[in-house]
Image (cartoon, rainbow, N blue to C red; front, side, top):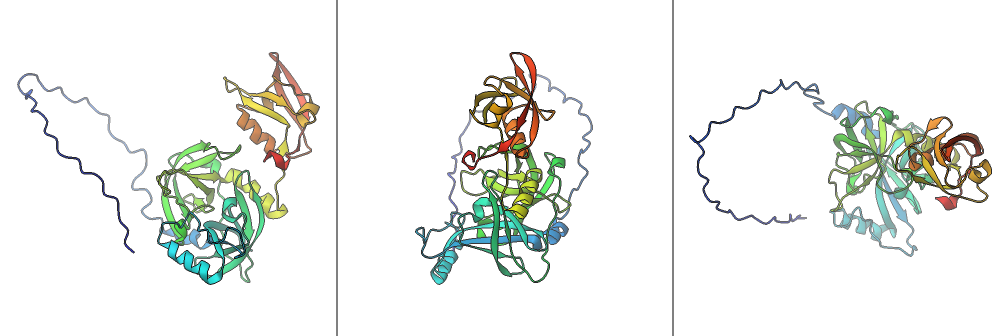
Length: 367
């Protein structure tokens, strides 16, 4: 199959009028004296990622999601393969098996018993989840749980022998400029790795109230969703989730959920099948000084009202921890254990007030 590349317009040469020589009219100014250029990064850096790849790639899986042939959405191709060399292969597979291939994604084995972490949008609404390992073995996976607010899912496969697996790393130690390696299943092609650096931390791309992404410049494409991002020790420090691209392919703007957010959610989904979040029952807004969260509305019978919070209060701390913005407050409340009591410090008419609020369980309607 030939792939045609779009030709770029050729700019015609433009003749510019000759510029009179300044030689002899003024003396050339000497260049300033520069300080010695001492490298801040010890060269030559990683000469090869091969040892890391050999260690971790066996635990990175490809995920195919299908729907039964009697689905109302039959014969719909996933966007990850449309217009790629894989489109023909997927259509042939659909005709052969009578299934609709909803999508192709990635994941990684977290435990030798077959527990796998991926994105929620990879496996949601699936009638069948097929997991393929690097060695070609395929398994049918069971969905253990999905957290829609963070787009994190946990699935499980059964194997007669222990499976290769990877371990978590601490994303709190990751710095902008650190080397990372991303692995996954781009465009359904199969196992693939790319390398790059962390471009930014704390990115909010508007996908939900808990956005706190690492921005990566390692090429990430459709099909990489649910795959891991590794540090140079081969530890998973983030879960690849989204890209921003006007073309549908990588333009160096990939986003991954840090492990500090993923780990507790995965543990809850793995062991309980769901995640209970705390709930305050109040609408919060940022203030100009970014030194707290304004209580804009209070639900009549919610935890905030029962705890004494009032419209116009400015929450500055919770459980002794300072709150800068409404977003940080929302995250802290969501992370709190339902049915627990927390001290909330507010500014009310320029006076500090300490309240005890009994945190509720976040209703599904809030999601």
